[in-house]
Amino acid sequence: MYAIVETGGKQYRVEQGTLVQVESLQGEVGGTVELGQVRLVHGDKGLVVGQPLVKGAKITAEIVDQGRTRSIMVFKKQRRKNYRRTKGHRQGFTKLRITGIETA
Image 1: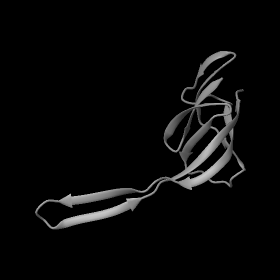
Image 2 (image 1 turned 60 degrees about the vertical axis):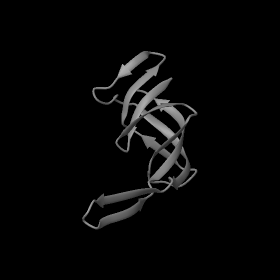
Image 3 (image 1 turned 45 degrees about the horizontal axis):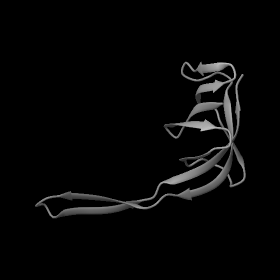
């Protein structure tokens, strides 16, 4: 059984027991989170596609880790204008372990 869930503006294919790294979510490590924006569920009853969401479906997950990704450098330059700007960015993430996929 698998599902397509949307969180943080991105869509992820999840199965029970898999680890997924998503955009930052509120919560403590060891806590649980519920993802309600389920786009598709494939299970025992076949394929259920939402219009746009599957009614009554939800994904439960355990928070395994909260952290930040590697630093990236953003560099802007305009030639011959003596204009240079350097900026760093680190994106926050939440690592989830999927514990359950429920449908109505």
